Length: 185
Image 1 (cartoon, rainbow, N blue to C red):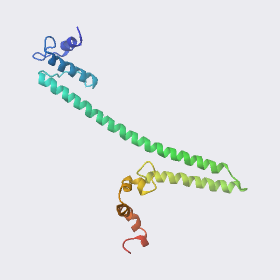
Image 2: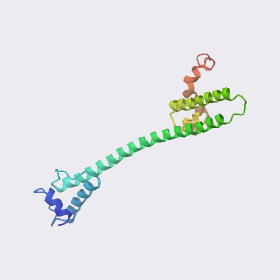
Image 3: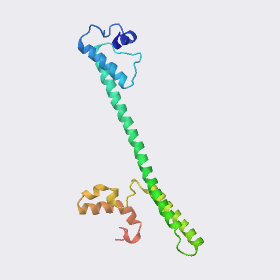
Image 4: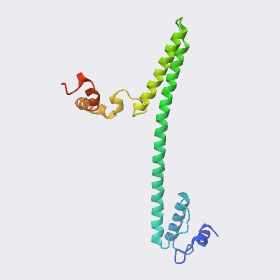
C-alpha cells in the first residue's frame, strides 16, 4: 500500500472519491488536499469532503487559512521586532552615556577630588535622566531633534508648505510662550 491506500483506509467515506481507478484530475485534487493539510499543519481530522467540489473548496479554504495565519504571525513578528529595535536603540544610547560619564569621572585634573567627584556624579545622573526622559517623550527610535527627522515628508514639500506645516505642528508649543503666542500678534 502507498499513502493513498493508508489515507483511504482511515478517512475513506462511502460515496466519496475512490483513490484507485479515478481520473487524474480527481487524484490530483485528493493529493493536493492531503499535501495542503500536511504542510499547513491543519491536521487530518475526522471531517472530510465527499464530492469533488467539496475537495476543491477544501483546498482553497485551507490555502486561504494558511496565508492568513502566515500574515498574522508576520504582523506579530513585526511588532516584536519594532519593540526590540526601540529598546536596542535606547540601550545603545545609555551605554554611550555611561562611557562618557565614566570618562569624566575617571579623569580628575583639579586638586579637590571629593567636590568634583560629587559634581561629576550629579552630572552623570542628569545625563542618564535626560536620556531616559527623552526615550519616554520620543515617538521614534532615532530620538529626532528636528521636524524633518520626525516627519520626513516635510522635506518633500515646497518651502511655503514646510513653513505652514511646521507652524501647525509647533503651534501648541509656540502658544505656551507669551511673546510667541498668536493671541498677542
